[in-house]
Amino acid sequence: PLAILNIDSAGQRVVQSRVVIELAANAHMELIECALSSGSGTRFTNSVVDVELEDGACLAHARVQDRHLDHAGVYRLQVSLARDASIRHSSFDFGGALSRNDVVTNIKGTGAAVGLNGLYLAGGEQHIDNHTSIIHGVGHATSDEEYRGILTGRARCVFNGKVIVAEGADGTDSRQSNHNLLLSDRAEIDTKPELEIYADDVKCAHGATVGQLDRAALFYLQSRGLDRDQARQVLTRAFAAGMLSSLSVPACQDFVGTRLDRRLAEIVDDVDD
Image (cartoon, rainbow, N blue to C red; front, side):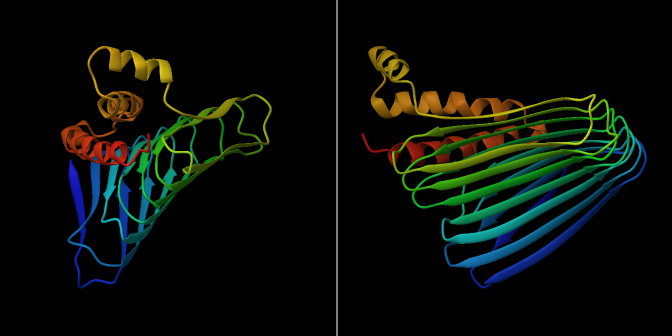
């Protein structure tokens, strides 16, 4: 895979970057983006990635954001898909005091496919936003989207996912879901999946869930010899495992899994009994 590593150093208060990716017809590419911080300090980043996929082009894209907890960042991914083109995008947000992700995919050709997956872990007073927009401009195309979140402390997260099916885009098949796990009474998730449909012959579904850890499952794991924190970590890891298993670029699975386990341990330690 091609990798883009963004490391914000202490001397950089504001960083703005733009990446343009153009894939020719039938080209395939794997891309990993990783955003990290070098030390602490208040910083702001504004990143834009523009992707143009021609007929039959395929992009597998994974992004990992694990910046310092005093960092603020805005990220935008915008993708245009021609006939039979496809993108599989996986997003993982672990760090940052304030993070906002905007993902816009514009389906312009029949047979195109969009797959969006995301996982966000937030503790303390973190704020993480995910705003996605999938525009089905033509029919006989598919989109599948699933985001999951685990929150504790006073964290607040937002998921706003919109699917727009334009007039005449018959044959569209779209699914969208957002599932959240709250480990604290003070944590907050605002979830708003949306369908905006202007065509008749379509298959579209969306849904959202917000819940807490199953007390019976916690009790069972403790009865098998785990302490309460270990039981919480097992259950939260299982909740997050679905996003890890659907990672668009398998080559970075070990790296993402290590970062995920480290952040989960921090979040579980922050839970009030």
